[in-house]
Length: 234
Image (cartoon, rainbow, N blue to C red; front, side, top):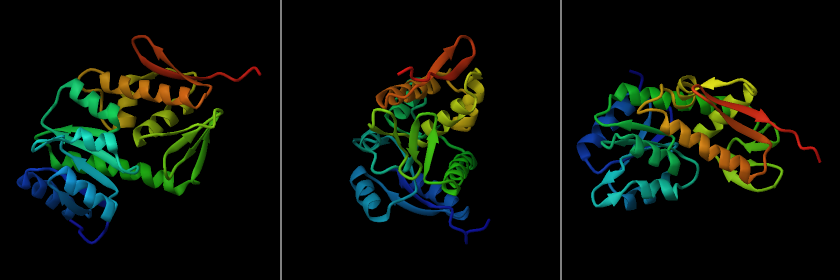
């Protein structure tokens, strides 16, 4: 394994030292710089000082709720939840609050590495393009992932929401199966039903509405979703 390259800085927020070391050692061996925090207080302090690129977060911390960190989500850092809570509702809640991905313990470190690599590849794609991207009637700052539209309001997008928006608009007017959407957006097939993907679509719909976009995301029965762009008549 090549430990000389730097694939990014990862902050692991986990109260069990053995798990922190297990994940941290594996990521270090695969070219990531790893910093560790055992509590939310330590996590906030570490984040403000070292500005990680990725955060791996356990939501069941000792006498603390890791979801509070997602709610206050500092900056636009990608958050991958790693938790022993594995129900569909647990996944949905974390994704709805702004997590970018979710893995259930016990984790396979290779899978975590693949998830990070997928996210890094998407970042490289965006960094290679201009800082601003126009999708239909919305403009997106790709660095800060802030979307603005006809209303001039500004809303933040998660990385997964940005990937989802691109996917839908690129194939506007064509239905996309949920299984394909989940694989392309989340990096894996639909798990525990399709509730997590449904929540992500619902959040993206609200954000498009907040900026008065003409992009409409339609449900396609027994299949998935489809984007339509309705041009203003005014």
